[in-house]
Image 1 (cartoon, rainbow, N blue to C red):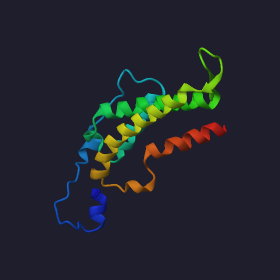
Image 2 (image 1 turned 90 degrees about the vertical axis):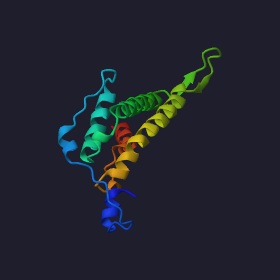
Image 3 (image 1 turned 45 degrees about the vertical axis):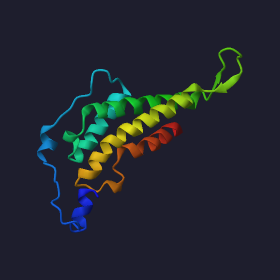
Image 4 (image 1 turned 120 degrees about the vertical axis):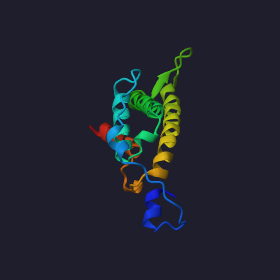
Length: 151
């Protein structure tokens, strides 16, 4: 059970609760790795900012954030390509076929979700904040894509 729920419920197990140090919020700063480009840097910074607000950034391996950012950026690129070119030509027969970016996008999405789960499990178990209020940046990605499509 997350720490904030234990506090709200009066610590039903009567075990000592692990409370993270707030110094990490002010002292810990990470930079995106050099291999990240464009949209992946934005996602990295957004995710690191969200983690900073949960007081858990210092407990997350920066490589997990970079992995998540890279996979999420690639998934978004595949989705943008699929919006424009849902069908492709078969290389030998020339017949229409489903775009290979559909399958690639699904693989990137699975990888991004796996990377997100590694980070979110740490936050969920240790954060003092209520994470059910919709502040999860991973949940906003589809909404952003849908809004972008309407422009």
